[in-house]
Length: 54
Length: 400
Image (cartoon, rainbow over all chains, first blue to last red; front, side):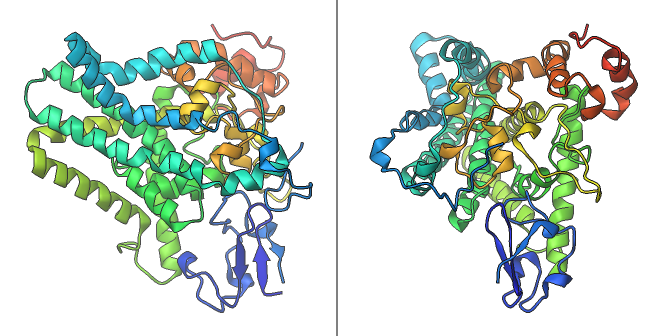
């Protein structure tokens, strides 16, 4: 699994692309994303709520 | 609870023609708000009554509460099958975009009127408060725009915030308030026993500090210092500086104090609305120490038609917090959501009169928690007093 999806709004974190705006360089593994990080689009769900998305 | 996923509606697609949005053209009435300074000017010209420069606050706090009562509620929801169609209809977006040119046209008009020098101080103040209503309600427009993924809408959100100098709202609201809503950690969620006058300084300073912390954390993760134009708080505030400098350079230094008055009045109007939206409501903690997911029961809702139409459904706040990316036209009413007794305009008038506010709202908070006050978000300095008044064994009567 290399992508993780917010169950509320569908925002997807892809390890390969990272998320430079959020400060995660391309290639940043999901495990390196802090546990208290929350969905940047909806703010409803946190990292532990994200679902594997392929 | 019936929550419907906007993206994966399994129901057969309904032809939009089979359902009509009864509020479709009513959303254009939201554009009356940035028209208030023009109306004030016309009314003063027509009647010669200088006090009509206060037309903005007279309309928002006088006329709108009456309209709330007269027009009443509407609990209708769009059928789930038309939501996707509703969300992609760009007409609704234009209803919000058009607020901005009118907002800034009214600000320029006000600066021209102030600079002419023929208004008394009281009349200038009246005009500043009228423009302040446009400025505060522009934060509501910015709120609708700032929740969206499209970069054009996010940029327009910051433009709408420039007039109030509240650019940090764009960060704090989405990344701070939405995450911590209805918890003691959120500066923008008011607590049972907390008056608006205790809440105002707490939310203004707390939200500012929190937004800076969130933005600095984001930038530092990427290896950048927070002191960069990439900082969305700094670039949003820069818009305010450019705006105020340009207006002062054009119309003279005499407009600057009024620009500040309208900005303070504008963001105070936003904060009094924040005060109404989650008063006393508290999310439970789960066993792992995290708060339960935000649900409609964690925000006060209001189905008042007139205030809702002028505020792009902001009062359908329970659905908004449970599903923040839903566009205003598709926000729903939920039976499980606690309901304010009237629209925001009326509730603001109560909020600035704390004894009246407590009398109306405290029993509603108690009723929401089945009479168990300990389940509410209680203001710590008032905890003893609140427990004495509403604690176990006490009747859930109104405060005296």
